[in-house]
Length: 207
Image (cartoon, rainbow, N blue to C red; front, side, top):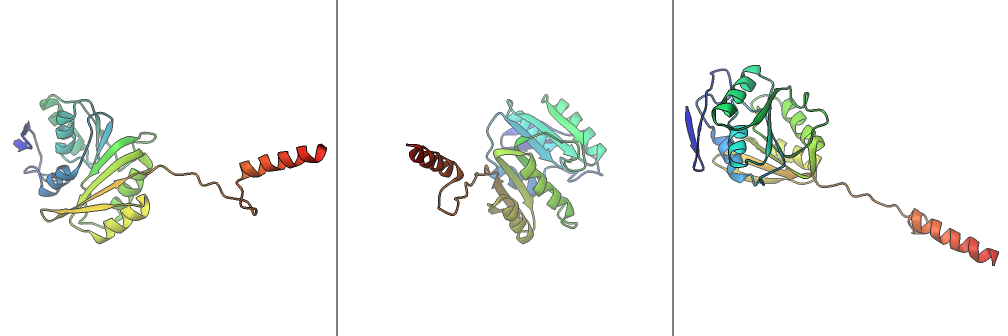
């Protein structure tokens, strides 16, 4: 099967058991339309299906290291085959969510999660994305539902931007680095300044 998207022509093998076996679904296309990614860095296709996102990104961002995971071994096999057929390198792994990605971090995570079931999978995807993204790393997620996803992503990331496109909602969030807050003491001074003032006071008493 040939898929033409954004002036890129790619060839894929699919299977009736994987998500969107007839080709590129509109939700994934909407997510890729919205996503702004730089060439280079580490990118994760979370829940890769037959591997369109991973293969397309590896083709259009040749300096990026693209990883793709799915809980379905057939989906991972197809992703590996499709990447090879299109002469790109993708690291495809069988993984139940983040299970096989311990210690790995990414500059961007893209996901079209199974939103027709309960929110357990999506909850794990969102919380795990925050843990596995680098500072200023980006999350892009697409679903047909808005409220729960918008609230959940905002609660985890502190920020979410929602774009409605072609009947889908594309969510964008960025991992902001944690700012260390120095709490003042009862005199309104930070601990460092308080220690400095105490030393000066002791020195003055000795004179």
